[in-house]
Length: 123
Image (cartoon, rainbow, N blue to C red; front, side, top):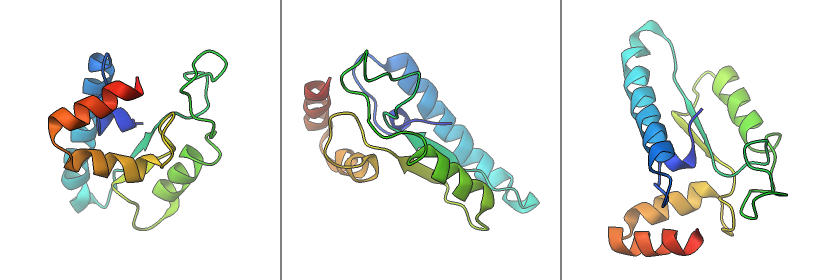
């Protein structure tokens, strides 16, 4: 179980983001290492999903989508499809109008300082 924070680091999330970046690197390595044994490795990376971890009643920027529309279909696909995706970037990032699978690649193409300013505005 990864996180969008493994793709894009957020201010004041250093410990959490670094653990998710490490998990992404581990899953990337394991995917190649286990290929010859016929084992697939996939990483599900949600953004803010309605859950006990992110309660919209307590935190305004929680996603309003639940696991039934975000992580559950990703898990089912990863487990049941003969060719699962390496990564499933799912859910909306709190407050953004586009899903994470569109926002994250866009943020990665921006210069670092501009990316920093955008992320700082979102927190």
